[in-house]
Image (cartoon, rainbow, N blue to C red; front, side, top):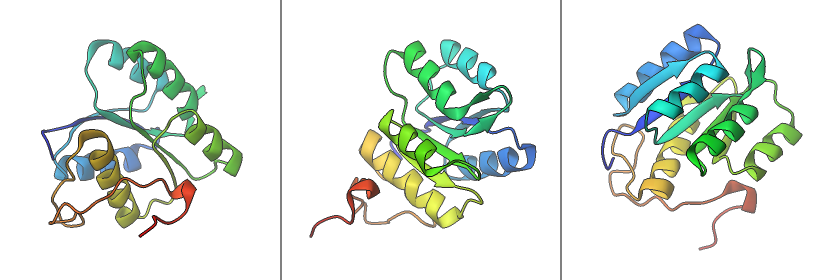
Length: 152
């Protein structure tokens, strides 16, 4: 990884937030976590964040709404992954259309999460991380699965 990237983790399920936070720390990230959308928005006003992982359903708001507010606060798009166990295909499409990097369905598959993480890092920061599921050869290619498989 280029450096210790900072991630904003917004998830209202305490056990899942704790597990994801620990996993991201193992992957070399500095993790800032909260269960509340407004706290996340307030946080990005004070702290530089490299990317975020947002739950779709949060108390009083959605991850999509938090993403929109963060875009306003930052004056641009923060690379973000939306996670949800209950989002509709329309919700997922809306999130991707707004500029979110990926949508992952709960329950999360850790291998898929790691692949998504590696792609986000390669796409936005130019260097894939090394690690148990990362490519030791750095052969990732940014690819948008909405466009089908990459052409060879």
